[in-house]
Image 1 (tube, helix red, strand yellow):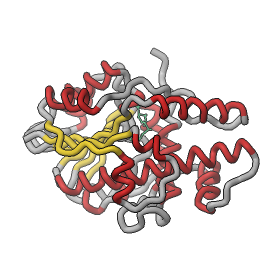
Image 2: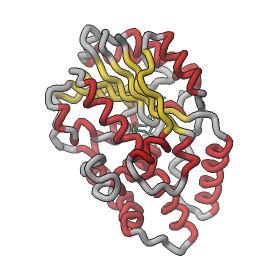
Image 3: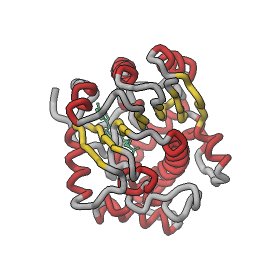
Image 4: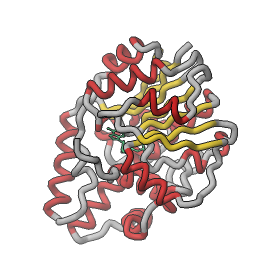
Length: 291
Ligand SMILES: C[S@@+](CC[C@H](N)C(=O)[O-])C[C@H]1O[C@@H](n2cnc3c(N)ncnc32)[C@H](O)[C@@H]1O
C-alpha cells in the first residue's frame, strides 16, 4: 500500500477550532492552541472567517463557506467530547486519529493523565513538527504511529506503555467516516480488548444522509472549479452508520451506550446560531462505557 500523505482534513478542522476560539460558545469552548498549529497560509482563511465579511471572489467565497460550516461542527463536537472526558476523569486518554487535536496542550484537567496520540504516520510526523518544543499540560504525551488500515493498534499501544489494566478514555473524533466498515469494526474490537472496567469510548460518526453526501460532493466540485485547494480530495468518506447499528457494534464489544446525540441538538443547547442544519443533524456524538 502506498504511504499516505498527511491529512488535510485534520488541518481543516483545526482551522475550524481556530475560527471559533473566543467567538463561539465562549465559556464552553476554547482552543487557543489551534491557531498556533497552523502555517501562515492556513491562518489566512481563518482570519477571513473571523472577520465575518463574506468575500466576493467565487473561490475565496467557497473556502469561506466550507470553513464556516466546519467551524459549527467543531464547536459542537469539541464541547461534547471535552465534557465527556472531564466527567469520566480516567488516568489514560487515547486519541485515535488525533490529527491536530490540542487537548493534551490545552486541557489543564489532563495534568495527571497519560495521553497517547494515535494517528497515521505522515499526519503524526507533521503534527510533531508543528508542535515544536511546546510543553503539554497533560502528565505525558506519547505518539503512536498507526494506520488503522494495516497496523496492529493493540501492539503499538502496548509498546508505547498503555496499561490495559487501568481505565482508559478513548476519543475517536472525526475519523469513522474515513474508515471502511471493516476497519471501524476491527478498531472497536481492539479498543474493547484493551479496555479495563471503567473505560469510556467517545466517538463521532455520520449517519447515512443523501443531503449530506450530495452537499459534500457539491462543495468539492465548486472548490475544484474555482481552482482552490480541496482538503477532502485525498480522504473520501467510506462509512456511515445508523445509530442502532453503532449501538450493536459497541455493545458486542462490551461498551454500553450512555448517550448518543445528534450534533444539531447539542448546538441548540449551546445557543449557537447555526447556518447549516443538515450537516449537524447527520452527525452524532456517542459516549459508551464499560462497567
Ligand atoms: C478529520 S481528521 C480529525 C482529526 C482529529 N481527530 C480532530 O478532530 O481534530 C481525520 C484524522 O483521521 C486520521 N486517519 C484517517 N484514516 C486513518 C487511518 N487509516 N489510520 C490512522 N489514522 C487515520 C487522519 O490522519 C486524521 O488525523
